[in-house]
Amino acid sequence: MRKKIVAGNWKMNLDKAEALSLTTDLVDALGALPENQRVMVCPPSIHLSSVGEVAAGSKVLEVGGQNMHQSGSGAYTGEISGSMLKSYNINSVLLGHSERRAYFHENNSVLREKVDTALALGIEVIYCFGEMLEERENETHFDVVSSQLKEALFHLEASQWNHVILAYEPVWAIGTGRTASPEQAQEMHAHIRSVLTQAYGAECADGVSILYGGSVKPDNAKEIFGQPDVDGGLIGGASLKTQDFLAIVAAMS
Image (cartoon, rainbow, N blue to C red; front, side, top):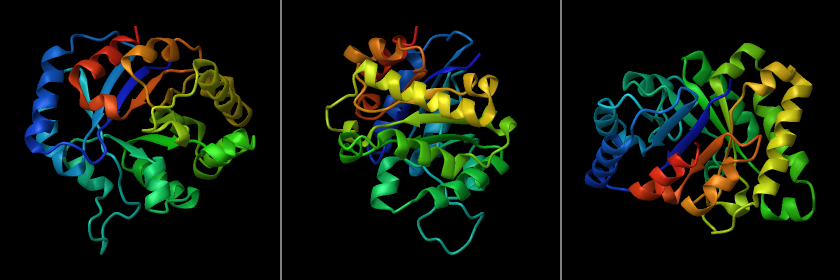
């Protein structure tokens, strides 16, 4: 059975004291989760060590990275490698977030390399993808999403999908206050699962968790997560507020 997951992407927010305070609050507040649920936060890389130490006191809260380079090491100033993540017991990483695609020009070919590097190191991939507003308006959104999946992920063996989480994030709904309706989210998530089914079969596709990201808040999380093919959320701004994030976690149940 696939997992329900809420993951908080802190992006470039919070200083050290704020990051530790938020992590401590979450560790203190999170009780035991059902076996099919997971909760994760992805802080900036500079906080991975200190946040990881606090989260280690919890049997519930996981810590993931926001990005990693496709090379094992080298002259890539400012980047971090997968082996660096592993050395801090970070075993999951976001790859392909729309902001990385837009601001740092990461394309599907680069992301394919990053995915391969992460999986080879035993790092779980949370692969982010989604269409821009003009692509939805001109009704190419299904094709765009299919290409983002196929070009970066469809070289994988079926067994490797046990270590991949998908995070569909319509770019027009990230940080804008606009949210895809529950029906729009379900429509795209069902499409994604059908594309997976065509390539890998129903058993593989049914086992992959597909998260929705894009202005998820406490007041809409329950309805979005209640859709049959939506398995949780990748949360941006609301993950920076303890009570908002906890309310979204509660919406998984």
